[in-house]
Amino acid sequence: MGAIMNKLIRKSLAAAITCMTASTLLLSAGEASAVYMPPADCVVDANGANCLTAGDFNVYSLALLNLQTTGSAVPGPSDPYYVTSTYGGIKTYSIIGINNGQEGDGNVAGQIDGAYNTPSDNSPNGTTQYTFSTVTSNPGGVADPTVLNNGTNPEFFGDVEDSWDATVSKVVELTNGTPLVFFFAFNETGSGTGLLTTDLLIWGKVTLVSSTPGVDPLTFFLGGDPGAGKTALSDPLPPPTGTNTDFTDPVNYDYGPWVYVHAGICTVTTPSGPEFVGFPDNNGNCAIGSAKLQTNLGQNAAAFMINSPELDAALLSGNYQAMQVTWEMAYINGGGETAWIAPVTTTTTRVPEPGSLALIGAALLGLGAMRRKLSA
Image 1: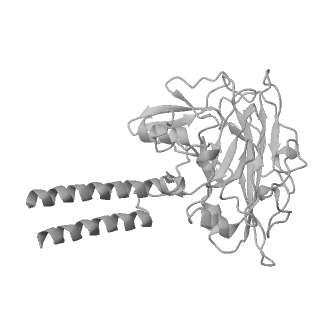
Image 2 (image 1 turned 90 degrees about the vertical axis):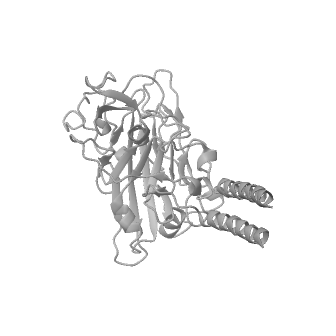
Image 3 (image 1 turned 180 degrees about the vertical axis):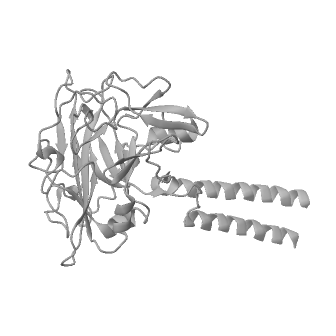
C-alpha cells in the first residue's frame, strides 16, 4: 500500500508542477518578468556609476547593467537586462513611438494617445540631418496620433497637439504604481562613432497639468531647457562634428539642450566589477586601460531605460491629471527608434502572482487530501 501511495503522490506532484508551470505561462510578459531598476548611482567617480543624469532624468544603459550583473557585454534573451523592443514584445504596453506606428494595449482610447510613427533614414552617405519631433510644425514633425485614428483631439483633459499625452490615473494603473520608466530602442546604423553614423541627438520634456485652477504645470526635461515656448528643434542643429573627447568639458561638448547619445561607452574592470568611466573619442577609441561597450543594441532590444524620481513623486501626489510628453531626435541614420512605457521592479525578489499562488495552493491541497484518503 505504501508503494502505491507514494506512486500516486509522485504523479500528483508532477501534475502540481505542471499546473504551476502552466500558470506561469499564462502570465503576460509584464507580469512574468519586470526589469529590475537598481538605485541610481549617477556620479562618475572612483566608485564608478550605473547611470548618468540628463537634466531631470537618470539614464541607465541596459548593456552596462547587464555587464555589471552577468559579465556579458551584450544582453541575450536569457539575461536580466535583455528587454525586447519588437512590436510583439511590447504590444501589451503603452507605445510612444515605433517605426510603423502600431499601438499597444496600453494606448487606451480616451485616456492615452496612440503611437507616433518614428522615421527611418538610410542615406548612403550618412550626411543627412534627419529629424523627428512630436511638434507638428517642427522639422520632422508628426501629427498628434489618436488611438486607431478614430478619435478627434482633444480626446481627454490635457490632450493637446504637439505631444504624446496620457491621463495620470491610467499611467499609474498601467505601471502598477511602480516608477515610471521610459524604455528606448536605439537603432542607428553604420560603423565608427559620431553623429553622421552611429550616434544620435535626443531631447524631451514631460509636463504634468492639473485640472484645478491655480495649479501651475510642472515640467521635467531630458536634456536642457531651451527656453519658454521652445523645443530643441526650435534652433538650428549643432554641427555634427567637433571635439567631444571629454564629455565633462562644456566648451568642447556643447550641444545646447540636446542629449548626445553615444553608440558606445568606456568601462574599466575594478575589484567590484565593470564600471562606466566615459565615452569613446572621435575615432571611436576608449582611453588606454578601458574597454568599449556597445550601447546601440539595434531595433529589437531596448538600449536605455529613463526615470525621474521627482516625476514619480509628482505622478503619485494626486495634484495632476494629465501627462504630456514632447520628444525630438536629430541626426537619425538608420532610425526606427522605439519608445514605450512598461512596469519595472525595484526589488530583487520575485513574488508569485496571485493566480499562481491560487493554483499552487489548490494543487498542494489536493496532495494533502489524497494523502489523508490513502492513510485512512
